[in-house]
Image 1 (cartoon, rainbow, N blue to C red):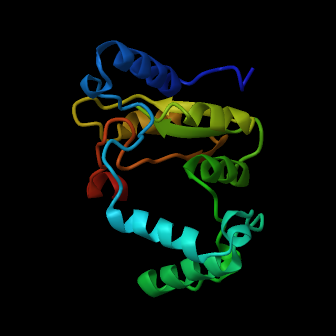
Image 2 (cartoon, helix red, strand yellow):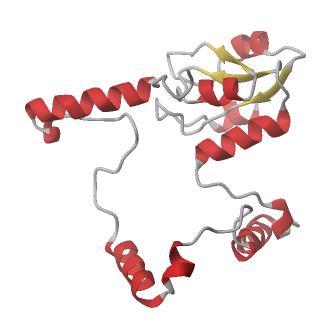
Length: 186
């Protein structure tokens, strides 16, 4: 059932592609999947070409260790330590291939099936299958439509002793609103 269900974002993407075939894709503003609409910087293309030409293909295209390259985790830890005065080692860093994997793992780290996670509407629709896939319940705080900052009275009502996490996304997807410093501090 989970694999057969389509998210709203995927449905909009398919509709946008079909509509683009009808009227020309340049006439469709598809904000569904966040795919790029401009070319990447030429430096990125040049770096990729350099890797293809100068790196052993088995090394370049092979799988990394499950917990990623130790050197990558070490570099991230050192960067965090330098920038924020932290005391991380590579063992503190858990790399994923994207936000979906990171969120799915984080949810399983903070909660067990039957507990709930709170987020703020409007929210990225994929949160729901990530939360439900972990056996959790997503509780949604209604939006404060005037400015899309957090409605703290509604947020307080969404919290229960069974709440084990809150998903805060700033800049928000899909509104693009950035939570104010006052909102974040509160």
